[in-house]
Image (cartoon, rainbow, N blue to C red; front, side):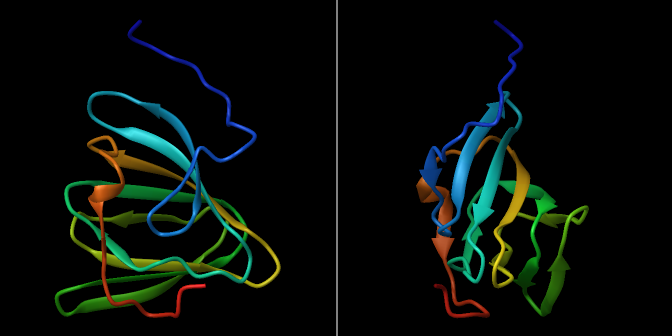
Length: 128
């Protein structure tokens, strides 16, 4: 079959290398989509991707995203409606505000190849 339909799974499929809960959605040969959720008050593990670009769209919750590459670094607010890009090789880390989970959908291009894709890097915040 060359097309699919899927509802958001009730439970996470896996814990991502950054520590967020992941519900795998769909993929094609050129990209994949997943739902990410990080519990309130938690910070992810800082990582970079070896081969994939990502685009995130925040659905609910509030938090912050740190991104850094070469001499460029920024922290941006994450809230519903925010869309961000994470180019291949960029160091990044995110955290959820106290008291509410942060949820986003993310698209990877090409599709996520597996946990070896994420490489630990020094981060902005202490992961918890």
